[in-house]
Length: 361
Ligand code: CS2
Ligand code: MN
Image (cartoon, rainbow, N blue to C red; front, side, top):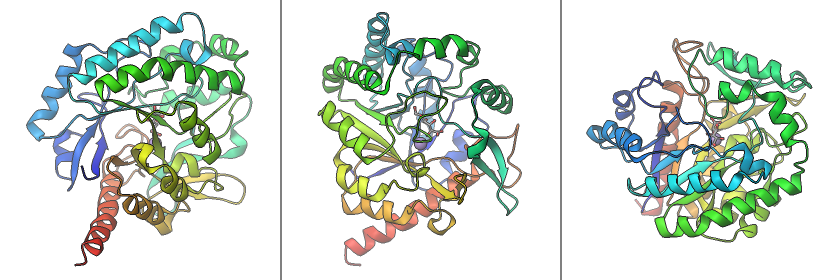
């Protein structure tokens, strides 16, 4: 199967971008979806999944990739209650199988998902982008959680569920005994329970990289660099234990060479996120357009690596800038329509050319 281009969509009534908009972007075949009203740990029921299927059908999009089925904190902490939540996760996998889902993207970051200090940072050309100002990440995570929730304008955002953010003190206390090694063990426990079901259902679990790829607010983070990826893949050495290789998350640390990781582990990358990042000398970074020269991530090298390796998974533009009137209240941070659509075209332009060259035309 050739590489398939995906586009993330947050669902009817929860996304300013419509399926009709996405249909007009050339080359997109897969809607990367989720049931965004679900709390981590809840079972996704077949009737709920069927509703999404019904919405996608008229447009001819497939629903092969889910991002994300979020993992309950009790699983990451390793509490006795984790088994109940793992059972629920397994039931969700079985339900998703009936709809042809092939890949589940998830992350294993304690408490938070991605972290930025400015969601609409002017980048000089009239557009805005997600931005990380290093010295603003101080000791108090609550300030950051409040800022992010306020700027979502009531939209759901996976990993930043208001219900969980309201319990930050409790969550931080519960994570206290969870060292980095303990977190690795808990991840292994979780995946080993899932693998037989994944094999049976032909669904790959594809872990997303931690964003940014370093410990934050004293919480350990695992998926941060090449050696961590090697460890992850050999720890549960199963073709259904895969990666969502997010170029921008990894390259927030400029030491991470994403193209070489692609070359090393292409067969275990089920889902590729393409995002470009620009670094500043003081350690701050900004997200950038997908064009290689607008950032430091090496987008063309990465695409070439995927192409050389005969990548057959799903790929999507990750975050984009906010353009042409998009901003707070009119689009989700990082998930406007226009820059991600430009990203698709940039990637497909490079890809088509490589295909043509390969065919000797
Ligand atoms: C995504 C992640 O928006 C993003 O940065 O790449 O939030 C991703 O969806 C989750 O970490 C996956 O669980
Ligand atoms: Mn990503």
